[in-house]
Length: 332
Ligand code: TYM
Image 1 (cartoon, protein in one colour):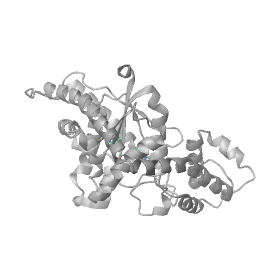
Image 2 (tube, rainbow, N blue to C red; image 1 turned 90 degrees about the vertical axis):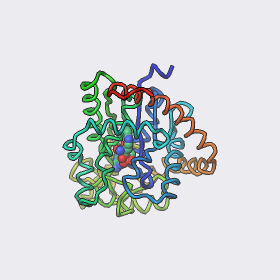
Image 3 (spheres, protein in one colour; image 1 turned 180 degrees about the horizontal axis):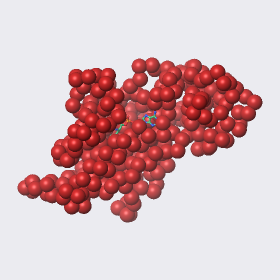
Image 4 (cartoon, helix red, strand yellow; image 1 turned 45 degrees about the vertical axis):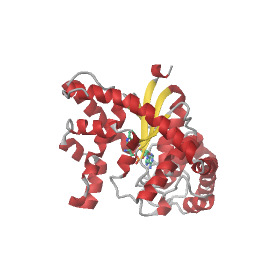
């Protein structure tokens, strides 16, 4: 039956502790979409090493990310959950696609430009070719849909360009993937600087709510969220801090900004913050309990990621063999 369904691929890097942005921009939508698609959800550890990692933290986070997928409601009996480094075709396909990518297009990626501004010449080459590995992830499964936050839109467009180029240079090989960017949680902003996206790699932990933050910490961070001096709860670009809190509420409760604004008529930011914190806590607390339980059951996690890798290996190898054949490699 599954083969008739359209395919979803998405992934998250275990490069830092996951944030509310990762949850609302990605995971929560995967849960919504999983019934209607044949889903592949990957913990992209190969991507994570583009930034220096402490080995034991990388191991811990890889299992934590997998646990978060399951605790959030991804059904491991239906979706394929796996760890990227367990499926060698990702690295192999990535090289084949690298030779079909241009330095110009990779150099135009905003995330790369931002990072290279900070790091200069000592930026590692992995950060440069990183979007090609992401393209390999997606194209190997012939994904139709890729649910991600807004920050990944440019990388996804590149994956489409690379796929079209390969299809044209050889013959139709890859499905051209579409993005799925959620209406409300597409870009959750930093609580301390609402002009910046909330990020795992932030220097200011107060700006970032982690999925595993305790209720006390969440209350503290939200109560200190930067707002403005206007003092009226409105959904406008001129009030980015307030807009961000409204977006968070909308993404969790699946309601519109207008509904939120209406319910705060005559009330102030203190009420909005208090409610936002409790809404976040109510959403994350049950998930956190499940994550803790799953992390105590390493054997179960192992059975999931091994089974996932088996299927992912099978499917991705088929595409990789096609690519190799078309390129002109002698079959093994
Ligand atoms: P990563 O690990 O940075 O983020 C994982 C997912 O979370 C989304 N996201 C956000 N959404 C809303 N607001 C935010 N503040 C926020 N921060 C992050 C991201 O858009 C993403 O969907 N390159 C990818 C990982 C990746 C991938 C893939 C994704 C590798 N291969 C193939 C899709 C398909 C990344 O670094 O995501």
